[in-house]
View 1: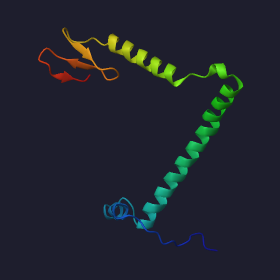
View 2: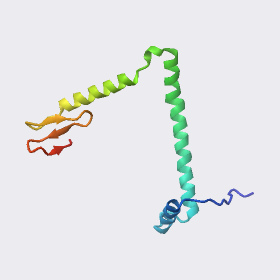
View 3: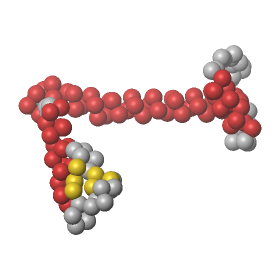
Length: 118
């Protein structure tokens, strides 16, 4: 009994060229191997997402459904993130005379007015 099936697929030009390139560089022995490896990667990713949903998302959903007071609003999350960013910004030893501008990505405006992103 045969354990493989032959398929005919159509790929956009850029994807077809990527497959050929993998074979040409010797990374894969054939175009079929490139496609098989891509499908194995896709299947592994799908399994990982399914596991994450079952192990983490579903229990969190069930817990919030059972006790809505545990929920955190998007506004609260944004405020907490902003607070953490401000604290981290204040904890950094900035150069003397630096003027901090920006909300989430602090920028140092040096005395010569050149922007520096830490």
